[in-house]
Length: 190
Image 1: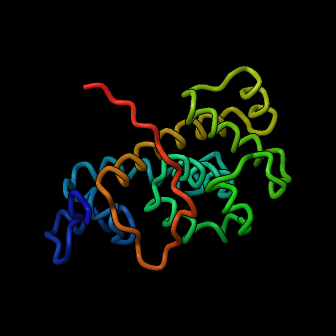
Image 2 (image 1 turned 30 degrees about the horizontal axis):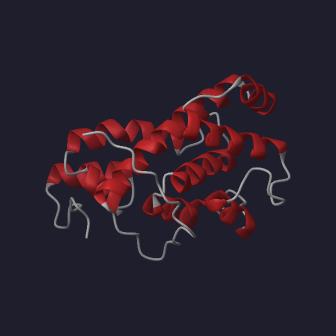
């Protein structure tokens, strides 16, 4: 069970409006709408990145989101995005598996821009930075606005992954499960 329960119908007027503004009443949106002001704040961010306003193509956007959520072990969000957007982004089953637990050098990645995006996401996840070689490779494939959107989107989906995992959101019906949730090292100080 989730540690914090998403809202359940019937929704009060403010919560219903917040959920409607975010999108379909999936668990994450119902969780965020527990505080309608928070949901409204998040709405603008999502509206930009999940629209054609973003500098990123649908394909690159989904590579970033799917890879980030897989690296974070956020099965809930990975399943939502793969279930809704993988076909629209032209992702093959081999590419979906690779995003979950493969590498940018896997044979399924034939486009240099796809490989550069995946490598950048991996580097950001591990180092919170891109070294000069990673930066140059990414800039050879993406323009400056696309790079800025990649950096922000990767960070945003770390945040979404933290929420989905820590709250223990249950997978949405009919969404795929993450093929393998990577083990995480536990390094906390108390």
